[in-house]
Length: 459
Length: 104
Image (cartoon, rainbow over all chains, first blue to last red; front, side, top):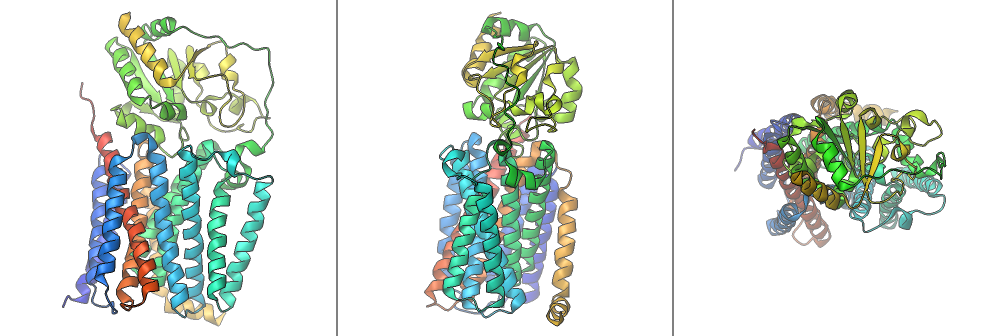
């Protein structure tokens, strides 16, 4: 017979391991250890709950082991096989599964046990948030993976529909709270919550994706914490709240990076605001030949790359690193400017560049990059658009006005690598392309960089 | 009103735990460099799989012929475990890349 106190101590150590692990995760040198600590804490908690003598019932270890084996195999294979460029999708899927687990758990508890009002409120909350996190994350996954486009899932007056849905959901929540929850009504509530999760993510896309993913992450954490309250597990409460806090912090950071409020991201959407921008159809963008670009880069003393989502799409990170190496060999100082919302999830560009072995001291954040830009000879923009749009600074009619951007036009030369002249996600024309310092380099990012590479080598 | 007061006095320790964990969470994570946003999110995401504990409790306390709870509980465990194992493994893979620094 295992002593109960020993089990409790195991939970305590597990909780501390979560806190300590997250703390270490916030610093580059210790991050990997932090992840291991957190995983250790989780393992300890799982062992403790498996042997806890206070839980009485059928035990049913066969079912538990079966479920765990399936989950472990699927999770492990998915994590090992996934491409680094597909990381935002993977994180979304995993996140959704956690939410689904919390929703299932609270559903069973609601159906099986007779609860007091407090218990019912918490269970309904876990069911609601978990379901939203599940369908929301799945839609985010489909969007990020390019399986679904924003236009396919948005309806006319979508924001109004969402508000009505929210009111109905809250109404049913309130009704269930004060009345006996029949099975039918509970299932109706579940369907409503699942549908709301889908519908609420539907109109949000592109550059707003990092905000939504962080928000869904915090939802999953909160649903886990609420589920912890239902089953009375302090361990779950601590873990869930920590995730909720980290997700909330990231959400706030992402919103700040775009100078928009969370509400604005959720109900506004870039496309909703008019902001067609100034139409200057007669402007002509200058192009640059690969040879000229190679010469320009080769004989400058400092180069700054500005990566964006296009880099991820073209999987051009390794080619970019090769160009970086070749330029460094010629004595060029190469840096990378990382805008906080570049890409589709928080820190997306950092992960891609790390995969290509770019040392992280070479990555400059927004403020450092803007300080360094006036002394930079050449800026090369690889698949970024809205984060370098001067309209954010000088065009009050633009929908991205006020968002902090990289002031790339302060450098001596700007080369923009782009597939075509089409505007970015926000649908706003970018005056940068017509700037006197700007030269366009058309083509797929990876091909363009490889061409540049061979040209630089030939010089 | 009485129910609320009753609820608070019954769950006082739980409320302490909630509030302090919220404060702790914000304090511990507040200063994250951009480099680590993705690993932090993905690591935290793995931790949110802690909900598997609840699913295990559910199954262990169910009767051996309560197939409704057993079935859904096992589904919950499988989903939660995927979240946990996949989340930690993928975070580790990412952080491994950060470690490889070029020495010149």
